[in-house]
Image 1 (cartoon, helix red, strand yellow):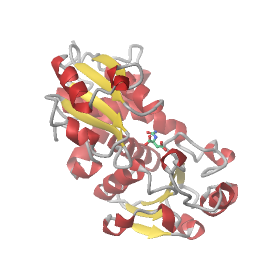
Image 2 (cartoon, rainbow, N blue to C red; image 1 turned 120 degrees about the horizontal axis):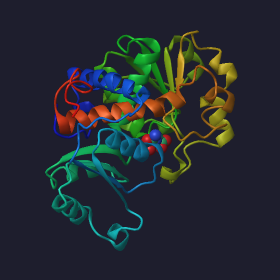
Image 3 (cartoon, protein in one colour; image 1 turned 90 degrees about the horizontal axis):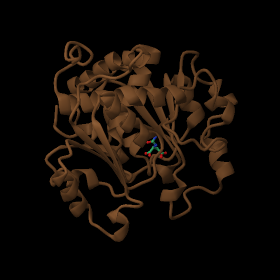
Image 4 (tube, rainbow, N blue to C red; image 1 turned 90 degrees about the vertical axis):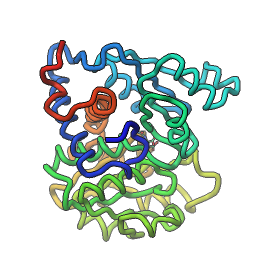
Length: 314
Ligand code: NCD
């Protein structure tokens, strides 16, 4: 495994399976009386968040703390970043403090890649611009595997604002690596030009894709990243690409509905669909902690599944 986790495309099938298997073991920890392991005692994990985040930041924080690491939350607001400090200078400061891992979320695609050149510790990409969000893809794969027993051979539809979605990009690569067949479903204006070179199919027709999907992953319409009009109206978007109860009924009986959050209820997903038993939204959040523990453990602690919850308790 690499020292850093910057792109899901960098993960080999074996790397991805090691992370999922380790996460599976670590997930059992949540049920213990003291849900904590000493594995990363004395190590420092810095959460460096330049963009707003609720679940991803807290998820990394809980994950690091369950492994007994020291956690420093460094948000752009209220730090010297607000005074105009460059990413490089911030990186050198973190380096001087001896950060063993830096978890970074940044509005610019490629920021984690740059950071990795300036710090000695591991860099984990928690979302960079419209580029990638690899731990989200890992927790999604973990959730699919738990619900449906496997990822290999499954048909996954990823629906909506693919153009602005780092979640979609990371999922296309990871799910492909794990043997799933991915179809992106979106209006032509919300599909990136480069999509032709990605390992997936595309469609503009949601009702046609739903009956042949095992998993449907709805994406948030990212209005904060839209400078222009990409569709005539929210109502029109919702009518063609939203998932409501009628559309849900087109899915095979075993199929699940996913969403990375935050959801625009009533836009890409109807409230009753989001809250239905087929929705995995809440599980995805819970699984995020176990998956991020596995990533921190494997990048910082070393070892493979089996050792994670075993004899290294001290
Ligand atoms: C996503 C993100 O920030 O990329 N959310 C998340 O991490 N759970 C998706 C989104 O913002 O729509």
